[in-house]
Image 1 (cartoon, rainbow, N blue to C red):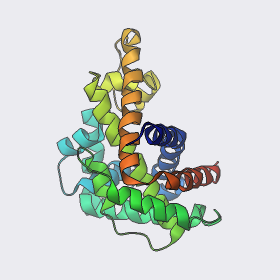
Image 2: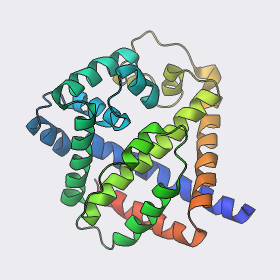
Image 3: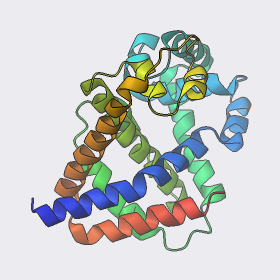
Length: 250
């Protein structure tokens, strides 16, 4: 891999990481998705989130889901996942989640012009990536593809989100951050509470640099994977597609 290729891949990773995260979060926490979940019997939307996302791992227990998701407090994962899995099983919830993403894409992304090139390139990317250490990404990669282009684009965005999330979980662990420290050095106490952690929180001001190191490691690992999977001339299609999808969402 040439230095120029690595630099171009790194630029592509950095330009798309925040839009992909924001899109993926918007879908996972969409009122539309939560509404469909209620129709399927999930009275607690967050129970659907944990069961639908964690169910991509198969019929496993909450300890496995907690290990794969990272950063969430164990008690929060256990209570929400078990409540959601009780409705239709873990894999049933995952099937509903994949379906919900397809429906969301058809509803919100149908007006995005010329999505097919992005879908084609991203299909190639996710198929070629090594899933080692990335169980949620690998689980999403195995879902039944949505037939419509907008619906498939939404599914692919979630795979990309889980790709970065999985790599970043490995990176935060590698630099020596505990799950709680990883949250506190990034998004702070408010996010830690949202993730189920209880105060008092430790002072992490002296280890903020570890978050910076983890972000850099995440970018570099992803850039290496991108450069091994896609030829550089396809990066612009990937980047412009992500940009167009992000622009479609308020």
